[in-house]
Length: 393
Ligand SMILES: NC(=O)c1ccc[n+]([C@@H]2O[C@H](COP(=O)([O-])OP(=O)(O)OC[C@H]3O[C@@H](n4cnc5c(N)ncnc54)[C@H](O)[C@@H]3O)[C@@H](O)[C@H]2O)c1
Ligand SMILES: [Zn+2]
Ligand SMILES: [Zn+2]
Image (tube, rainbow, N blue to C red; front, side, top):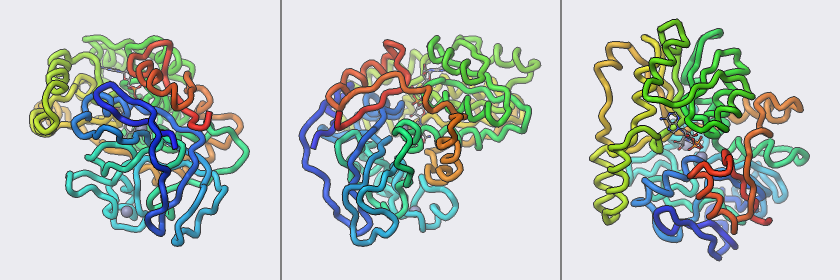
């Protein structure tokens, strides 16, 4: 089959690789009809490079048709249409039973000190082959895949794999009371959905991003928008009676603009051999924390900072004085996808499309076009906001 593989820093290419086969009795093989590129893939493209191996198949936002199932599968049959959550979880361990599927104790990558295994997401998350490919082996398919109807187009359902539940969890964790204000930093795909989810819940939404077309999209879905600047926290306070938003959701993560020193550290990291670069990533705290620091500065006293954006590094400096003095609550983590999917399905099947899932994708292409589309998405060129690949053309 054809699959998109990681080849090196900022380099991905399509290769012929062996078709996946059933290995465990709870596996399924899915023929992928649509698969999206995520902002998280951009971390592999750059900072997580030291944890990648040449030839790794990437991608974690897939859906498709069940091709084959293992003997232990009773919930799925050949021909079923499914969306595959990006975290691999068992559904019955202690963590899964608490709705913490991203910490699944059956699939935790203990050797790396990581939570649940993820599709296509480096050795930190189990080196599991990903879904930007023609076929995908899905472990724990007796629990993970979300079965959907046959009628509506792929893009009505696709974002259930990751960004929609991620945004949903981010807004849940932000925990803003009705009538309150939620600021969303970063209006990439995750931020876009956070805006819409906040808006349907009746919150006032302030959406921040340096990219004009991303602000325009957020404005179409109910946000008051603000450009990124050095005085952002002060501007957000000004818009909220001098107090700051009740919660700030950071949908930026470690690719943030606005931290030149860390940008330099990232460059340096790219020049080190992998083992040293891993060490530096784990201990030296090379993160770009601009968005997170803005969130902490901007949020009102007693408010909540909800991190959907992915951060790495162990020695990241945090403004503990302000955090303690302002009595801030901080909630974060990889999305527990399966926890939210049942609640989200009715929104996707509603003809009125209340979350506007049909107004997000700006670029579509084949696997062969993926390398160029990765570059376009990373550089935010040509109005690129969300890319969907169709592995069978
Ligand atoms: N927690 C999870 O389970 C989970 C799941 C999916 C994605 N993510 C993470 O969410 C983040 C966003 O993902 P995405 O797909 O929307 O990616 P994206 O890269 O398209 O979006 C990031 C946006 O932030 C903007 N931005 C950059 N610096 C900023 C700053 N200082 N202030 C305000 N905005 C700034 C960029 O212009 C961009 O629009 C990434 O870190 C991704 O890894 C987390
Ligand atoms: Zn993702
Ligand atoms: Zn589990």
